[in-house]
Image (cartoon, rainbow, N blue to C red; front, side, top):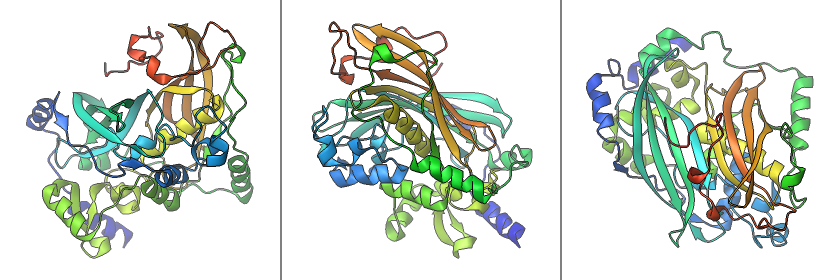
Length: 409
């Protein structure tokens, strides 16, 4: 019976015969084109900022406690670095290659300033590149890159993001069966669950204990944070935290405008659902070759930002955050977000450190490698103490030979 339900969904999902040369050419013709962005949360109200950190499980008082934040250098609650996701997800599959399934694959954020309660969340986006590669998951694949600029009501840049997604033909993904040996649900012992819970409850942010550049050493390891076991509640909370919803007439009108992104699902009596409902339905995830329902990429990126803000403290500034979603994080998986300092340097009088970061699941698989750059306060009076992200563009900084480029290669 379960197999029959899956076949029904497979038959109902929009399908195309592979990734055609013509479709790729049309996508490449869009390079440089401005895209229409999503229109979800457009004002960073105090409630919206709190809703976002609730949706990613971040308990840092700098992002949620007005009384605490009033005594920091900011004088008020500020946004979590990834809070612009409330407005728009950079790199989400939503343009070109109709009928070809896609997955969010990564973001490379460069931050310039924080958002405060009352700020507008504006953005523009353009196509950067379209590349073709081969994949063990689906054979021929296409990677689409965009650049998203987030700004506030004063037209000040908040962040610049390079986002990318991968596009895969659904039938090939199923037939290759790359994840056939991965269990749909991991089973934990009561002791394992208790240990995970204790790690989650012991998480804390460094806060007002200033982390100085001079005291930070290459090879220093960050205190890990734990997210999981992943549940439907976790995934739903992220959707709520980013204000993403549409139903009934609004949903129907979206489906009529973009018919290849929606389908009538027999599991909901023929009700309309987005092709990305595999984040919530096992059957749809299985129809595209994934073991079961899985998390959202921006959700995992946000967890990695929490790893960094917990470690660096209130007086530092997260300048860059790059995360690549390499493996699926299915329901029941647990992610340990980890990191270590790999480089310590200064540029134009600004003390910086680079940190290698990664998410690792209960099977020891790295699901999301990445890197971060942090501006730290210094005890040296020749360095500015107030770390202002708008004073520096990383495109001007000589990159370490091991650092990935900010723009697609």
